[in-house]
Length: 309
Image 1 (cartoon, rainbow, N blue to C red):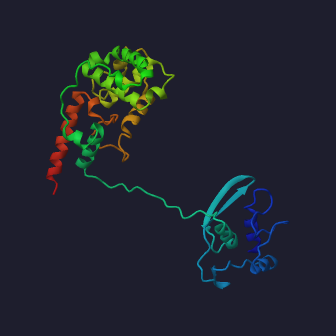
Image 2: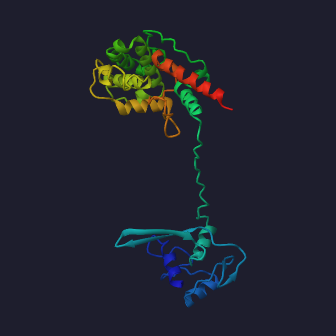
Image 3: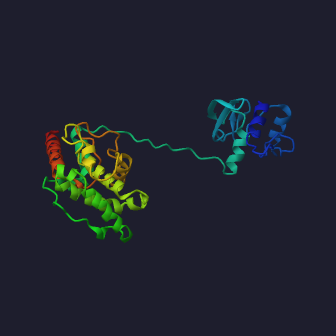
């Protein structure tokens, strides 16, 4: 046991010599306690004062602090890692010294999130509130159309980015989506462009071409309004035509949605009946076609809630 204790002390050494006062390497400073000196000579390891050990009697102060991690290497390759309490390991003296120097970490508190099952109608109402921007917005939600051809609000965009925003808006206007979906989508895109400026999108994507940013804004608006779902008459490729860029800006679009609305569903999976859309947290970015669906979801969920005991 004494040999194991000496190896443990040496394991704290980063320069080839023991840094612990319990060290047994040549030139190291031995422990000043008589029991530890006797242990080095006899090859046994006495417990530190206050340690309870069946072979040494009860010290009356409880076990040694901390946990011991044993790392097994074969030719430098890690093959095993074991953890166990310091108490009873033979390294108690070193543990007490480290504790006295304030080098031992305290107990680790691990916080775990317990997922509580919600009734389907509760999950739906929670999801709807996230999509439209809160419970109050959900209660007032209607299916009235957005203003057609609403101008881009440049006053809400930093002055240095306004010219760039105008260029982006020109490319957005060239998309086929507005002719195929309707003028509400242009208004939603322009509002989304202003919101994007507010969350630092122009600073984040300084090197991105205006047409690519236009594709990002349009893609985000289409995904947030469920306009590219299965069964919809126009594919995303068709809706993006006319912007002036190739490919799908999926990564930037998803990141923009995350900046605006956060995670689509914080509990891992959105309600089963809900469409898989980007969550922007603002009903003013949603066209009437999609809000009409949301109103139906809301009314049905509230009816189910009223039926609960």
